[in-house]
Image 1 (cartoon, rainbow, N blue to C red):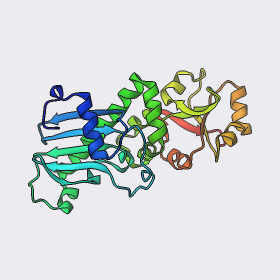
Image 2 (cartoon, rainbow, N blue to C red; image 1 turned 45 degrees about the vertical axis):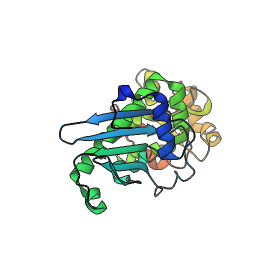
Image 3 (cartoon, rainbow, N blue to C red; image 1 turned 90 degrees about the horizontal axis):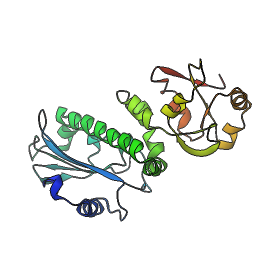
Image 4 (tube, rainbow, N blue to C red; image 1 turned 120 degrees about the vertical axis):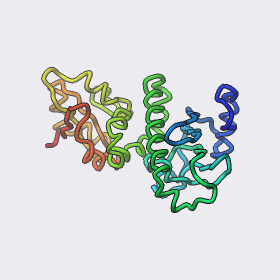
Length: 253
């Protein structure tokens, strides 16, 4: 199916194919089908699922990408074609550049694989960014399913760190809710006059973060504080030091 033109494939066909290769009866949130020519030649068909599989929290879980070479199936679980923090992505890469008898070891260390991985990573991040701006409700669904995994990219992908940071969502004293739906750009748009830093707190729970005395102090001064309470957050914030030239500052420092 993926060798046909996009215009010749219906949404139903895309959804049916996704269910075939993912063993998932739910429809994907979105997909991207691209024909790449130039330095490398390949077809990519990348799906963003609507829900997480039970093993997705295991960093060694099976990835959802298949590799085809010249339209022939080579392998599933082609983890070397997508960074680990995007392991929820499902689909396929069909490359015209590799020989059919190439070994997995050579594939993993190939410059072609690195180029495809980098290009597909940026494509997925662009897909997510467009979804976040075009359909906040669907993006919130995606964030609730995969947001904690996406946070791993802040440490793992320094080249795309700012793109990933744009996709992060937080609970905040502004919304007064444990729902993580505040972006960094929204926080910055509400910063007080003269405020230079993005203020946050990490805690073991939402209630612990919200009730912290230092948080209350900032709230009384009219300064918004991002409330982080997931297990990965303290580790993530040790790598996320600035966003659009604004530093992050813990209210406990």
